[in-house]
Length: 210
Image (tube, rainbow, N blue to C red; front, side):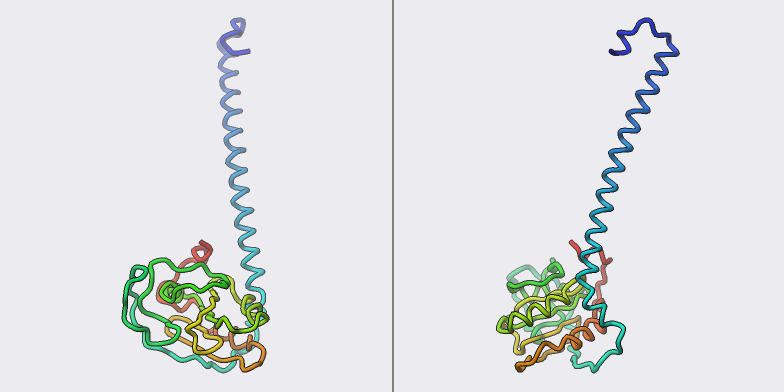
């Protein structure tokens, strides 16, 4: 029954009814906002848990001293943005570690299909580590590589590699063949520890999730 249908109510009682109705509306709004906030918190927790699980293998190794550094420094070729398919000068390393690149980087993850060099150079600019593996490597090695791919580490197949494995960072490159041996996981972990987040454009950690 509405307030208009209650002529027997006094003005004071009607004001009390309106006040109670407003309070109920405010409570409903607050409850809805609280549910949305809780949903966002749950999403953030799930994302954080995924990052933690994906990074466990890498961080397990960070307590030991660094091994030998097999990487080579390459002169920086600039940070110019180009459009997909646009021509540019040759890169000074294989795979490239700086220079012309597309405006959109790739999401840090493990890929089983190739991505353009020009896109991945942008990842290096943001401080990512790029593990470029030749498609011919055994599946068990690919699975071992996948354990390293998490926040700021990206792995892609690359036919143009002249070695089985190439580890790229901004201006740094380490390349090696397997020669029938298991993957040198300590070498990869050391490279990540030395050169991750060393690019000229550093972004907040959350930006790498998009």
